[in-house]
Every structure is written in structure tokens, then in C-alpha cells.
Image 1 (cartoon, rainbow, N blue to C red):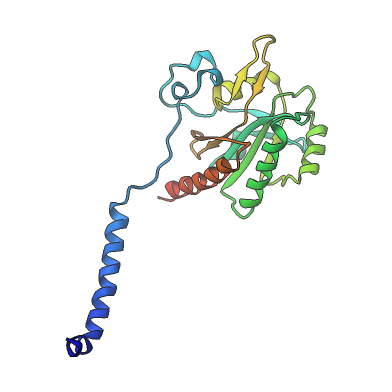
Image 2: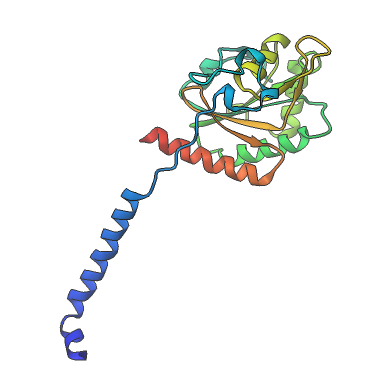
Length: 223
């Protein structure tokens, strides 16, 4: 028996290597490809969605917008053309969930600093307080990279409609027109301006999941 193995040692090693390669190829072919869902208004918590969209089940995308960033530059949907991006809603004087959310956005910025395919977008829900100057001050304090992350302000009605009708990420505050109760949601948007995921911006595990899903989305685009 030992003589047999000694005689055919090379052949057996080659056979073993080929077997591993073949099994790996078969596994990669049969393994289901991970694909992120495309979220529609009807699938999201109704509290976060404008009532006119509660029954919309297909073709939802982020609407065009025109806002000013921390440098006073006009930011429209064109800035995010052919980009994956993460969006959220905040205000600079918030002392509850916003500091944690901003810290996690800073973490995303750091993790994605070499990735030109992914950008960040934070909308203030208090544009009357968060002027361009205030956003710039906040950006400098937090170490915002202007090339990757826009903090935007502008018309309150437009921001309200973006939050409720586009990103499906904020609660209505009905005691006053166009008032929002922002949530901890980070929203993942694909290159076709579709929503592909919601994440709790205050939870480390959700940030890890978001980073994973960004890679899944990039692989989807490359294929």
C-alpha cells in the first residue's frame, strides 16, 4: 500500500488540487448571489412616508433637489449622478441622537475615503438655524471632507418633501407646516436613485451592515 502511494504520489496530489478547484467552482456557481432589496413606499413604516405614497409599490426614486452645502455651493441630484450614497437628516444643535449619528458618518467617511464611488449627504431639518455659515462651522468641527460629504440646507418645504416623499426617513410633526421629527435612519441610495437599505445611524452593528451592503451594491453594479 505504501509503495502504491509512493509510486502515484504526484498523481494523487494533482488530483486533490483539481478536486478542490472543481468543488470551489461548482460552489461559486451554485451559491446564491447576494442582492439588496429595492425599497418602495408601501414597504416602509407608514409614519415615515407621506400619505400620498402609502400605496406606491414600484418605481420609487429620489426626486430632483437643489440645496446649498457648507461651502455655499449649489448641490443638486447631478452631484450624485452615477454614485452610491448614504443620506440622513439632522440638525447641528441636536443633543440627542445627532452627535452619535454624526460620529458614525465620520466613521463612514474614514472607511470610504479611498472610494470615489460612494458619497455622503446630510440634510438639516432646521434650515432656519442651520445656515451655510453654521454648517461650515459644524463641518470644520467634525472633520468633514468637502469632496465626499455634503451638509445641505435650503427651502424648508423642499427638505420636508425630500425626507417624507423621497428618502422615507422622517416623521411628520403636524403641529406646524413642514416641520419634521427626524429619525436615526441612514438611507442607502444606488446609482439609479433607488433606496436599497435603511440603517440605525446610532448603532455600530448597523454601520457594519451598511458598509457590507455598500460592497454588495458595488458588486451588483460591476456585474
